[in-house]
Length: 135
Image: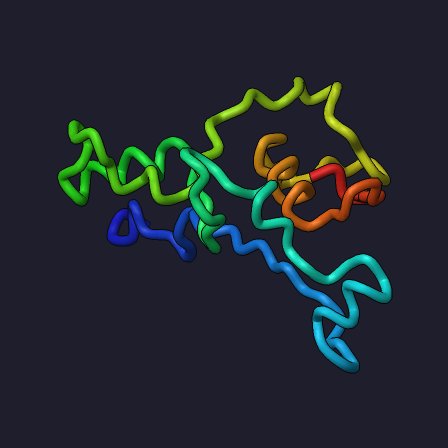
């Protein structure tokens, strides 16, 4: 047992993919948007920083700081992390206040700011979002 002290079987999860999917269009995306009012991305509402086009990568504060340190732009007026949306840490509610379904709370609750950004990016004006997982 001492020989294997400090060993394990997994690494700490640090990558959480978010999938954005839609049903394939029969015609074109434009035709689908005109017919059903959905299918596009609200680019202008999803802009961040000084009106930057939304990226397909979002960072939290720790990742942004690490990126700036690794690229040597930590102290510069134009850090690399400015090119990505950054969602800073938000305190989670106490365990007793967290939503539970069938006695289980959500294991990977996302920052409210991230969820708000995704909903804004994907939901047409007046659209309804049902988020059944409280995450």
